[in-house]
Image (cartoon, rainbow, N blue to C red):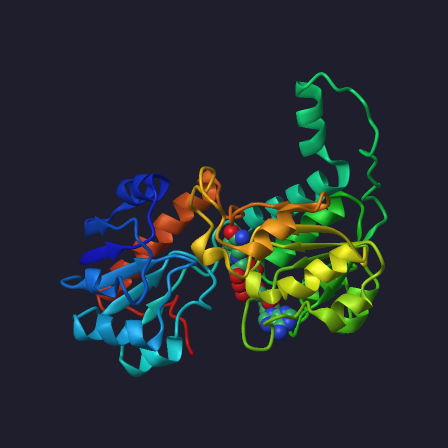
Length: 328
Ligand code: NAD
């Protein structure tokens, strides 16, 4: 098939070239949106990532230009109007699970860094400053961690937490019986948030999870709690979180995702003015740590993403059952 792959970097191209099962690929650095959708002319399929936008108007352009398939090289699909795609008969396929441990381990990396301040210690020691002032952390052992969403990634994260001796509480619309048997206690969202020293978000972004963390829910947290988001930026109301950081209701914030990340993440603004006031405010807090959507970024995950994506394309090309199709 002729496939246009949007929002690519060299590392995407390396893995897609290595695992290509014989398709004709064109790589675009540009993201897919209303302005760039015309680049899909002449392709049977397009392959997109987390910040590409497939709205109804983009779909109309794709459809008019003969695109028959949309493959996401990620798990989340909040950036695609799946209902409209299905109505046009364009299947949307995704990579539902690829190394959930990659993201779960990154969530733990954010916790450990925020808590033990290794990023600050690294810089201090390089400058010959061996002082421990303001580097004190807390033991994770016996701390209560709330896991919101216990699917593939949330479950892998629970397994890591067990190794650290944490007490785990969870909220999910479908509690996991295996985790319950292992001692994870499920409660309502309110109970789970109120009871925890650390809250880590692992549920998908949907209409009913949009701004799950907001002015009201932030008030429920223990004063000084740590909030970690490696799922999707839209789960958090950024303005409300900034207020909670200012009045110390929130003690630490670790983000791998950000609501307005589309125009920032995966780009180098080191010599430019950052075009986003909220993220510059967030960066100014000493107890905020932000990484730019790198939770998935391990060799193992990249291999699985490429393999499963080509598996999805091959299944479509052969007219086989589309097991990774997203239903609206
Ligand atoms: P998953 O589908 O396996 O699990 C999601 C869980 O959330 C399920 O158990 C589901 O029941 C639960 N859920 C759904 N609606 C909920 C609600 N309203 N409240 C509470 N729980 C709810 O997905 P996953 O593979 O574990 O991925 C989770 C999210 O992580 C994805 O949606 C994606 O946005 C994000 N993600 C981020 C990265 C990254 O690089 N940072 C990489 C992959 C995935």
